[in-house]
Amino acid sequence: MPEVHKHTHPNLFWLKTKDGSTRLATINAEPGKKVYTERLVSKDGIEYRTFDPHKSKLGSAIMKELQNFPFIEGSKILYLGAASGTTVSHISDMIGADGSIFAVEFSARSLRDLVVVAERRQNIIPILADARFPEEYSFTVPLVDVVYEDVAQPRQAEILKDNVQTYLKKDGYFFFAVKARSIDVTKDPKVIYDEVIKDLESAGLTILEKIDIEPYEKDHIVIVGQKKV
Ligand SMILES: C[S@@+](CC[C@H](N)C(=O)[O-])C[C@H]1O[C@@H](n2cnc3c(N)ncnc32)[C@H](O)[C@@H]1O
Image 1 (cartoon, protein in one colour):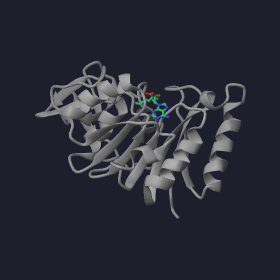
Image 2 (image 1 turned 90 degrees about the vertical axis):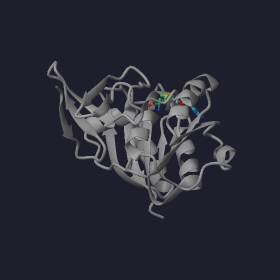
Image 3 (image 1 turned 60 degrees about the horizontal axis):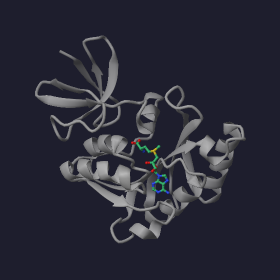
Image 4 (image 1 turned 135 degrees about the horizontal axis):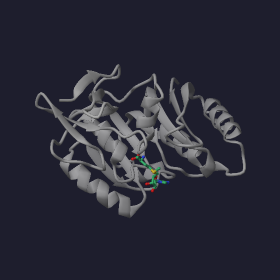
């Protein structure tokens, strides 16, 4: 039988499995069903899904001791760069039936897989759109508690600022996965991170923490911040 321990963040767990390894997990909102290559583990009538930090920047940031955690019951999240729903599905587990994830993805191929996941999980709203043009989804996205961005695009910071400006509530949080190599392959990633942080601060955003997510991803950081004004 696995051991299950609560993580300090809500609706997150540590599973100690038979092989002695400890893995991050969420409670599966659709028991019996997987979304990617995660493992399903049951204990005391509850099914958990392991949360692979190598496949999710949120998972990597949690493993690297992410402090601010706005993915709570009932949260409304705008997620940019949803792909086929790996991280989206874990957020879906954590925010519960009263939360919603507006999951924007511009690849029709990835969105097809995401739609299959969303048909089974009512709190995911898949949106085929380009995050560079936030007005494209204003017909369906309300003001949200969290903007999550993981798009690996040269204009990552502009995309974040525009979406935060349009959709994030005052005092809401943003979670921004910065991929240095998508911005400029020739520059030292640390210089890029400093420039991105300055850029966000000069747009009036407050930076709460910055996490280097090595060894899970090279040349990536996660920036978590707040829109205080
Ligand atoms: C690194 S993957 C995201 C992985 C995903 N966040 C996860 O953890 O499961 C980046 C995704 O962003 C999408 N993307 C890139 N630019 C985009 C844009 N401008 N608008 C919407 N999606 C975009 C890509 O098609 C790709 O699926």
